[in-house]
Length: 136
Image 1 (tube, helix red, strand yellow):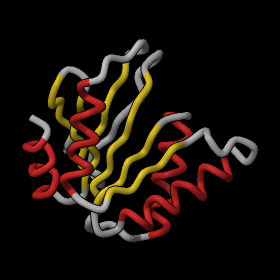
Image 2 (tube, rainbow, N blue to C red):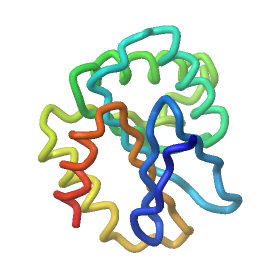
Image 3 (spheres, helix red, strand yellow):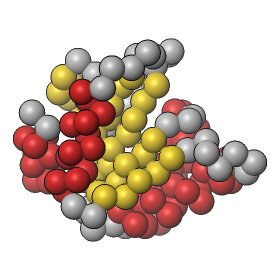
Image 4 (cartoon, rainbow, N blue to C red):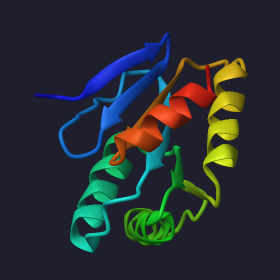
């Protein structure tokens, strides 16, 4: 069963291992990852390749125990896909759940010229619920 839920007009929650998302034409996306439990480099590399290939130029935000590993693999993957454009993919790592939730809240309040979707992808349901609660 897919674990994907629409939280607000343009915010979606997706469970990392069972959920799936598809880019919406003519929309841009910002992706927020909660990564406390997933540290398999091969899995992360495949996720990075799939996401960067599907979503193109976007921002990836990481929080959780394995956020440094995820950020490094996403950066390495982006350089392989876009070797001459280091600004094609932007990654950010947050040291605290509060700063991560603050950033998500901030981008949700901004107004965009191009329709924008936000995805909160998680591997820790407790932390996911905490972040969702902090952004309401």
